[in-house]
Length: 434
Image (cartoon, rainbow, N blue to C red; front, side, top):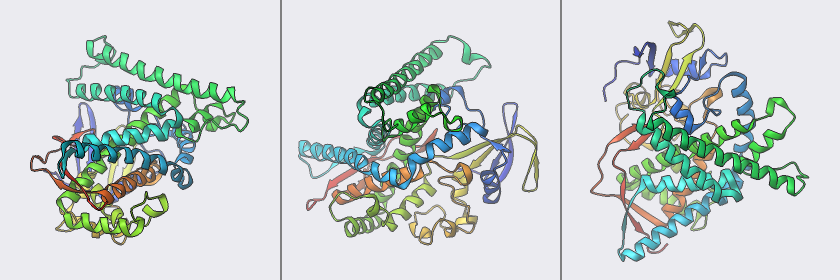
């Protein structure tokens, strides 16, 4: 990949844009609380499947949504989700073992990207919808089909105003979007009716994410209230953000551990020391320091999100640059995370020990790593994602060893997130003593 300096100007049609890979400027942008660097307006196709939720909002609406959602990701709430995460992972493990028995081989080959996508979808469904996970799973399946349809059309030549035309592609998208929205609306209404039937004496609509959102729709506090459409948008965004990026992190981590067997063994030893052969809980996985370093290094080398986007809402000064209103800004995480200036000559090498003293001391600049962003808009679900990934990998390392298949083709590609274009076929060997 070729880069053209840390800061340069380019054009998005008629809109001026700046590409940045300078950690000092990135910090200024991401730490800003004045609203000078707003979230840009996204493509209508992206909003149709990802929802116009907290990740896309600005100003008072963003503050309101962020305040409502933050309690869903406290440590106590996450601990309650651990059993659901583990149960979904054990189901996947049992399926792998069954496939190995049927094949009557000592190992099987599994395409990890698809496998982890199914797993993270299952986890999100259970944590978002709890007892309604079957219906929620059907909704998210429909949303996934909408995602594939929209992504497939994003490379098409854009004609101004074409989004409103009843083309076959648009009609299909509208139909799929309406199906997802109406299904979510029925789920939400069902949760309200269920609470009403039992008298709703405690004012609780469930201990899952949907329950938290529905509760926000019934409050009399306008600063913490959500409409039905806003709940739908947040459900869509939680699914898209929560399963796509987490699945990619799991996939690339197994890829790197398959290449670096010594690290796979070190992690397995750590997991067995801290967790034994039991199902880990949140307290156990918090002690897995080596695993945490490996995940941070994976995020550095193969960050699911390739860039962070902003748009100036007014004229502002960025470093030594005077930036007018309406300039599109992209912070290039791939370039920043692999910069030899900040990470040294081994910037392209897998070296988890660079994070042994924490993120701020891993590179020559404390903000050279932006795997979860920073500042007021730092990733809301990062603790959820890290807990899930650590739990899944701990359970897998207890029971399997991994080797990259000879048929693997290394082709990272940008499909909204960093994907393995041809998948990650992996040889999985059950550990006989486990």
